[in-house]
Amino acid sequence: MNLETAKMLADIGFMASAYQQRPAAHAIFTALIANYPDNSVPYNGMAHLHIMTGMFDDAVNLLKGQADSAEEIDPMTLALLCAAYKMAGKNDDSEDLLNKIKNDYPDTNHFETTQGLIKIFESTKEVNAKFTELLTKGQKKAK
Picture 1 (cartoon, rainbow, N blue to C red):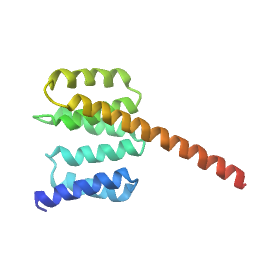
Picture 2 (picture 1 turned 30 degrees about the vertical axis):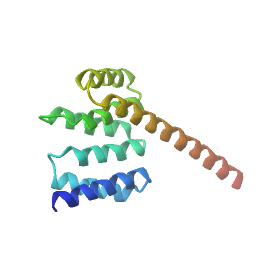
Picture 3 (picture 1 turned 180 degrees about the horizontal axis):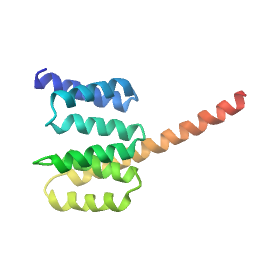
């Protein structure tokens, strides 16, 4: 698989993750990790899938491992890790990493990107909780 194909598959994987197509996203990111183990994008994609499906600790563990082992850390890995910490209820870790991003990347938009990711994931979590509540109420009425 060439790098251009891998990038296209990663984009498809992110879209599958965003649209709750878990098996497809998981298969794509698993294959990309196997073929490109030194590239952060497939790990970020798998972490995105974990966050979107409420597996926050899995996302933290995956991203922490990636950040700890990388020679040069991808700022998107840090942004996702910060969001994963927040979603997992590890607010102190999230806040510490958010401050690190702000201080280590002062001339970029990484700080704002991270804040935006956190808001998106929090909104998604709220929508999923409301949907589950409505679904549960509907099932109770049907009985």
